[in-house]
Length: 288
Image (cartoon, rainbow, N blue to C red):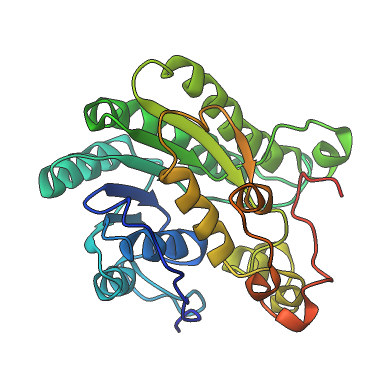
């Protein structure tokens, strides 16, 4: 099984030679970000669990590594479980040894289960907290020494603006806690690191994005008709990473809003079905 090809827009070359460590980059949004940065000449560390083909899910660390090389970047494929401290420590050390440092850490790996407290098993609860919020702590804790040496480091986590309305918490409090936790940690890191040359931000899609999470965890593939392609998040992430002097430090960003700030006006081609671009569904945790 393979994912749809990604059409890469023209880049600036600002990431040439930069090393981007992306968790969960074997498919979906992580893959799209990897290819976007690779087209700019970046070194991409594909840190994900999927080393072997899955019967239902497309992509592995090795297939994305091949795509990264074809797009013009350098790739390092590492099988990493972001719940495991030793694996994260070893992966970052290998990345730094291979490419001479680490300039960006992107927390893209995620676990999702949209159930309330009564319906969420302790095992599933622990999984979401570990893969989502705890991983932001762990990758930052391990990565900060490398990022400080960069001089222009970034930590970007794919999590929503903090909005603790009961309507979000009632149906899926365990998942909401894990995602809001990512953002709260990022807000704290932005303050902690503001004088260290590391910029910290979060990024969330305005609409649903056509990924395996939508197909298997949220609804069905039919929901792709109301979704945008992962490349919109890749384009927005790219804008974050080329922003200098901490100008976005501490921001809780939405993909569409950031791209509009940067001059994008036509979003039709981002839709999974451009003919349905005016009938897209908002993502979780966002009001119209």
